[in-house]
Image (cartoon, rainbow, N blue to C red; front, top):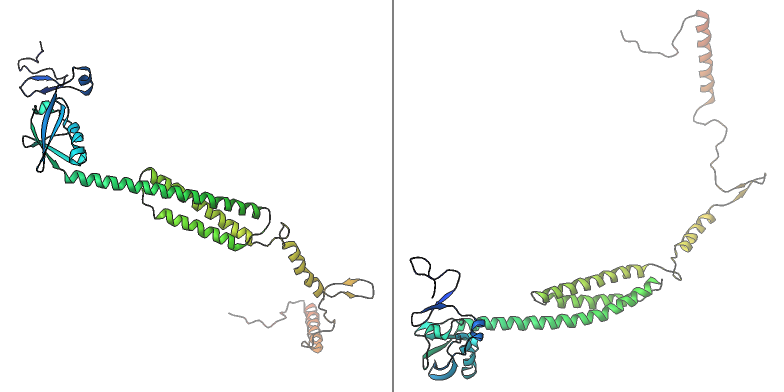
Length: 304
């Protein structure tokens, strides 16, 4: 006996229930319970698609989704592009046939779903583009691997102090930049987008390495060492030659030209003026001592 919930006579809320076509309320079935139960009888339904009728033998407890998959062969429609109507009402793919009231020799109408077909077409196109993008990234990765070997070879040569042709470095940079342009042209999402981003970073790293090698390769080297010591000696040599050596009578070597000044007074200052000024100063000093008074030696302007 089925227990009811109070006066209303409703079944307990813990269980899920479904209504059978005859009005009987039973516990809702699941896929696992259907496998454990007795196999359902097979019914034959008539499906109308356009002006053609198709007869399909299917279990009475099957779903409309299973019926759509069985109709894909004779109709040529994908099961996601189908719409099934029973008693002028569209039925969901998860609904069971017997619950909807489908019986033996029942009539079902099949129509094409353009919206679902468009969605499926877009999804297929997106998947195809993603697959194509993945293949392109894979090919670019192989090309970058080949160029990476050349970058390592140039780096090994230049690090040993040897020089390489600058055109080889420039050509390798251009090839890497072409691969970078190919990666930028790829439109992808999800994991493919992440792979593209990783390859872009990888190519940029190699280009930066080549730029540094190009600068290092342009520096002058002499058997693995810089030439600045020899150049510095060459620059200091003319300076030493420009400084003449003069020998004095005492045997001292003079290496610098010194500017000499005569001991005679400058012709701009006459000797008479100097002697006159000295005499005036002596007279003033003698007069100051005789009068015991201080007299100014200059004519000062006195303000009251």
